[in-house]
Length: 233
Ligand code: ADE
Image 1 (cartoon, rainbow, N blue to C red):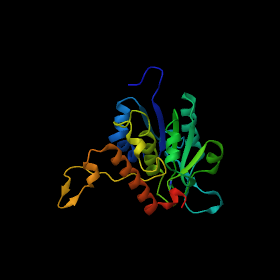
Image 2: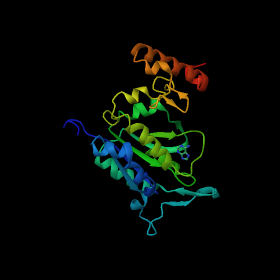
Image 3: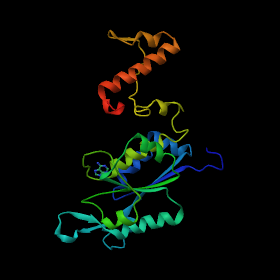
Image 4: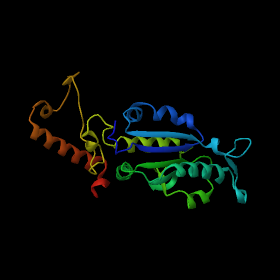
């Protein structure tokens, strides 16, 4: 539980496929964060907000372009209903042409109190929603997913795990890959010798300073070898 003056971080996800997200947000770290009262994740079915009698949320594109476009009305109705209840730090739209999601963005979004994530689908959404309601457009990377649900799930996971208290070991998020623009050092567990595959001796030495030095050197070496771009090389 949080002290009375702090309230849990809240993420509202708007989607046409709530069944894709319901299990995910209530399982593992995200489920535990919610049980501990540190985060609230609400999944909203966009179809609940349409005024169309067939529950449709999309329509043909003007200009004769191929594919269906998500219409303004249900998205506007859902976002307006949420905004009437509380202020939002960001209203995020998941889209391959958005700003690239990375650890610094996850860090800064983890400081937010309330976030909306709108999952894109089909050919896209009516551009007026992006112009008038969305405050941040985010992409997971240079590839195209069928919908924004996987992107919303990945972002929610990366953000909520940074909320203090969500990870069991407070320190562990600091040691993540990318947290200092460095990849994490390798980790090992028992047995120290598995089929002749040995754990580095230094980790068994109990010598804290030497272990720390080994960890930093491993991080630097792996970053230089695998992601030199992170070091500006
Ligand atoms: N929707 C479809 N592709 C996407 C991507 N790469 N990132 C975020 N949302 C998306």
